[in-house]
Length: 185
Image (cartoon, rainbow, N blue to C red; front, top):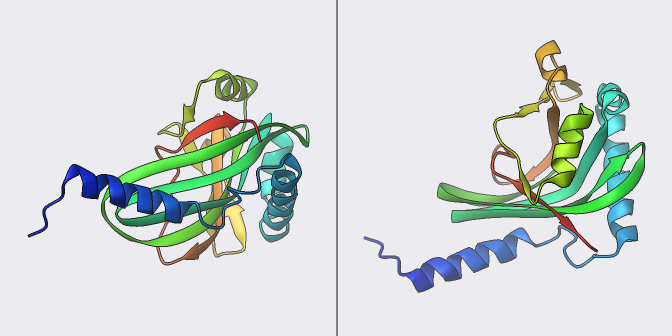
């Protein structure tokens, strides 16, 4: 039988958060470093999933998270940094963080882009004090590995998430409960 104290709980949470910070650009706080990762991520996305160019052309803005690292051993955490782009220009920088508890083990990294399909959705994101991804985010999913499909119902959604380039030992990635906070790099 395992007995957890507050101290062991806090220690494991800090250790998990430390693992989640590995390799995600947490030490590259300069805007130029984040912008370079964002440009590289978008190049990868458009090269490997050409259908996303149509989403980008119709979107009012895009939040690009080049690398999000997620780790869990009972408790889980994720963290990443990225940029909000409007009309192909960076306007703000954001961090994405989440925490979870339950049966989980492993580490993974992935990229994701949130496409804000309406000016209202973009404005709500920009004016909120820490926006959290919830049930209102629709996912454009990868089918057959080489294309991403966005169905008609998805393309009418105010926010569309594309999660791609997953690597690691955890299966699946969800943005549910991820909190996005504006940062000053």
